[in-house]
Image (cartoon, rainbow, N blue to C red):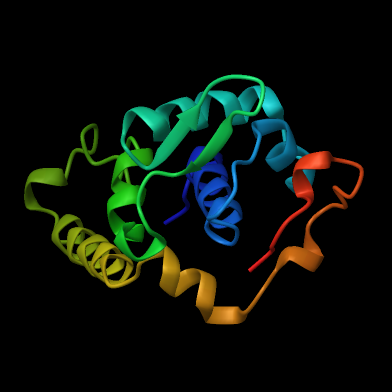
Length: 150
């Protein structure tokens, strides 16, 4: 199973915000930290706000932050939200699909994959390997970076 870039970036946003939950961050700051497209992140952040994962504060001192605690954000639920297609293979056009046993095996594997992800929260993922802040692109010239980096 290969997750989309959309899901990858959504997780990156949540991880970034989860390591500093006490402050507002900008999309530009997150894009710079990961060296990824700000325009692409804007679409993802908007979706995550609408889905209740993030809170957006407008205005000059605005930004984004987690809408819930990291303990309340389930990785499996997020993956289900951000992924459009969980078909591991395209069985619809296959001649043997009605009699093929592979479909049920792959469905079982997918259920197992999602069950594992359902067992983890964003907090679990953040705690699993330690702080990654030192690995992000330098944002010391960005005034929003002042503050704790849990």
